[in-house]
Image (cartoon, rainbow, N blue to C red; front, top):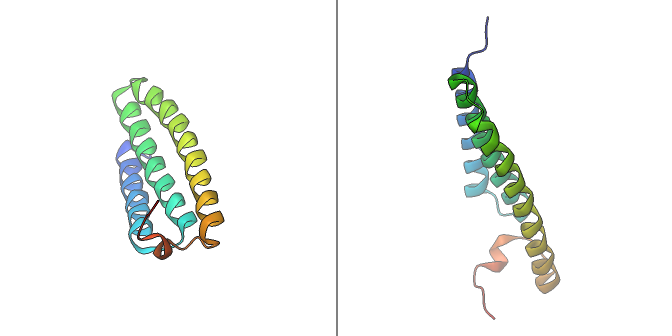
Length: 101
């Protein structure tokens, strides 16, 4: 059995919806950030599949840029988590429902 780009798209959709479920249902900020990373990686997988299907390298270039953006997002997200933990000594998102200066 040959693996077609269609299979990668289906896998990408499954991983994306797992990420969406993680964002919508979890209260821990680390789980939230990991779910966002799952969603970004599923988009990367879909771009690679479409790039392979069209025999074009543009999708691969976009994936490299998205990986760089994801690395920046992780560093900013981790900085925010550390700042929130220093403020309240807890990382549960329910504590931070009202952001005040």
